[in-house]
Every structure is written in C-alpha cells, then in structure tokens.
Image 1 (cartoon, one colour):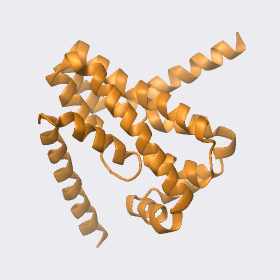
Image 2 (cartoon, helix red, strand yellow; image 1 turned 90 degrees about the vertical axis):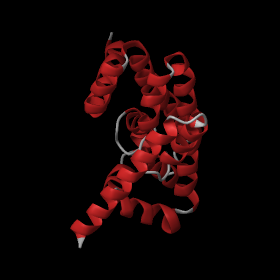
Image 3 (cartoon, helix red, strand yellow; image 1 turned 120 degrees about the horizontal axis):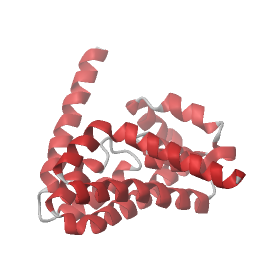
Image 4 (cartoon, helix red, strand yellow; image 1 turned 120 degrees about the vertical axis):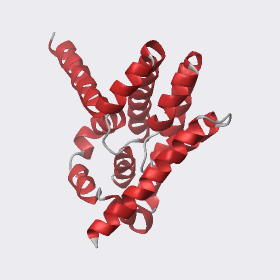
Length: 203
C-alpha cells in the first residue's frame, strides 16, 4: 500500500513539475512565479527554483526582477505559514506535516526554537530543507515576527539572487550544474557564511 501511495505521489509531483515548467514559458510567468513562491512557503511541495531557472535563462536581463519577485512572494507566503502555525495547527498544520512526512523534523526543531530561532529560519530559507516546516513551526512557538521576517528576507533573497546571478552569468551550463548540486551548494554556502560570522566574532 505504501509503495502504491509513493508511486501516486511521485506521479502527482512529476505532473506538477511539468506544469510549472510550462508556466515558466508563458507571458504570465511572473505572476505564476509569485503564486508558486508564495504557496511553497506554507504547503506547496515543489520549490520556485523550478520556474526561476528557465525564466532567468530565457530573459537574463530580468534576472534581478525574477529573483526579487520570488523573494517577496516567498517571504509573504512564509507569514501565511506562520499564521497557520499560530491559529490552525491541529486543523491544518499537523495533517499537512504528516502528509509530507515532516512531522518528526518539526517536533525535533521545536525544542531549539527559542534559542536558535533566527538561525533555524535562516538556514532553512537558504538550503533545500522544507521551508514550510520552519514557517509553521515559527508560528507554533510564536517566534518574534521581526526576527522571523528579517531571517526570511535575508535567506530567501540570498538563495534566489545567487541562483539568478549564476544563471544570468554562466547560462545553460550553470543550469545543469545547479539542478544537480543545489542541495550541496546551498549547504556549502551556508557553512561558509556561518564561518565568516564566527571569524568576525572572534577577531
């Protein structure tokens, strides 16, 4: 039964992926990118990078605008996830996290939030870790809204603008590289950033 459910889920996400690629080529792509980036921060399974990449390759001169739209929409969507965590955890958030298989990660992260909240939001925002888990968890523990917003803007912006810059500068070859190594690149970038902060602190 679980295998058939996994297969059905895989088929569904594959169809959504193909649909997003199609939307990225339309004249209304900017609006669709905004919508996808917004809902991905609270419940949608596929990251907006899937649309951002072909859009930047098709119109590299609009790379910053595309990254900006993805960032703004993702942060705003993060506040929706936060609200779900605050007001609708049992009704919406818990079933959603169980459906995606993220409930265990959510429970583990709850214990670290009050001490490391800003860094958790930042780390999830810049890496492939499911950002929706973090936005909902932030609402559940009532993480300071300013801290949540600042960490979200910084992390989401750095991620999307970095991808857009690399694509605009290096084109199709960078697309292939990013798609294969996005997870590793994100984690490495985060580690370098944290190392830089640590170095400044102890200098």
